[in-house]
Amino acid sequence: MVEYEKIIDKYGTPSYVYDIDELLKRVNYLKSKLGPKYDLVYAVKANSFIAKELENDISRYEICSPGEFDICNELNIDHQKMVISGVYKDVNTIENMIKNYDDILKYTIESINQYELLDQLTKKYNRKINVLIRLTSGNQFGVCESDVRKIIEKNHNSLIIIDGLEYFSGTQKHSLKLINKEIEHLIEFTDELEKDYDLNIKEIEYGPGLPVFYYQGDEFDEDAFLEEIKNILDKIKNRKVAIEIGRSIAASCGSYLTKVVDMKKNKFGNYVIVDGGINHLVYYGQTMAMKIPHYEILPKSDTKETATYSLCGSLCTTNDFLVKNITTRTLQINDVFIFKNVGAYSSTEGISLFLSRDLPKVILNKGKTTILVRENIKTSELNFPKEVKE
Ligand SMILES: Cc1ncc(COP(=O)(O)O)c(C=O)c1O
Image (cartoon, rainbow, N blue to C red; front, side):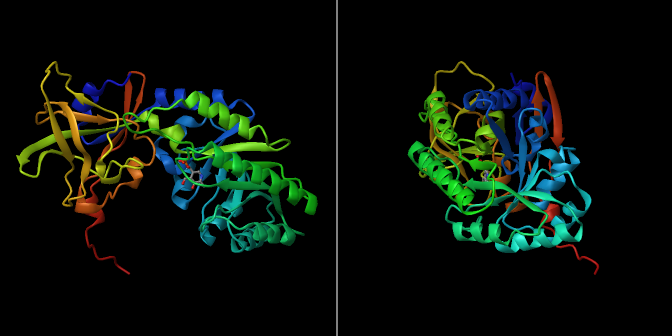
């Protein structure tokens, strides 16, 4: 149990709290539902602060940028768990990896040019690597089927070992029908590739975009949903399947704490101003702040009086609404809202640099212990025009 009162006293607001007990409970719930046959891959982009905590409970990390690699490397995450992915693989970063690390688990190939780059660098350093070719889902990521074939056809006298395909088709996917269609297509396509080429497609890394239900009234039967997902995945025979997930692993462990700092009523609304804002809090699908996420207000109060408020952040934009028209117990200055399910993407998707407000602290909560893992960061320094000596 996170002791929010103590955290608010010690660290103040706005801040993020990531509850590691909840994180591990969540990842083990997903593993128990999907079964031991499926490896879990954590998409680091969802939240890098919790990446290390998952090390014993997931099989791989999907790393999509030099920055994500630096974070994972500095956290001493095992290279044998790293899949180096990303739509832009710059020469320096990839050269450094191939030259200096012979233990990286895999790379993805997202274009013919990326194939050429990997081919050239592996030859230069005489290094064998394993790869997954990313099949596009109809966007700039990955390659189309004819380019998958071209890459396979090019791959002679090379140090690149093609292990299989990666496929990710989007986040917050609720449609079992769509997931079923994707899996059936992947089965058909990988079977065709094996028939057409002297190639063993050993594995498929698949991102199902498992959904998170963020809003009040949105509850669904997740047990039944995951059982169906497992039935669909079970159709893939004779290939290893790795399930690449971010949101569904990370969301539930996170809370965002923001304090009421001002209140005002006028003919346009009953406004509550908090010390955070949409620069820190992003809920998927929160259009016009009309939906009500799960939240708690501290201190607890016995008052039966309620009122309807619009909750606004501290940015100079009329868009800075966290929630519109929520009916809660009557509020006072210094009350703290604890928004739930913010463990995935929230700390990274906000417009953090706008208005030069500080980035929130980040706190990991483990049992009764709290660890401050990021101090407030002054974005005024990032937005300051300081001449750089050239
Ligand atoms: C390639 C890839 N894999 C996995 C993910 C994680 O998706 P989600 O957070 O919906 O599980 C993303 C998210 O953008 C992605 O781009």
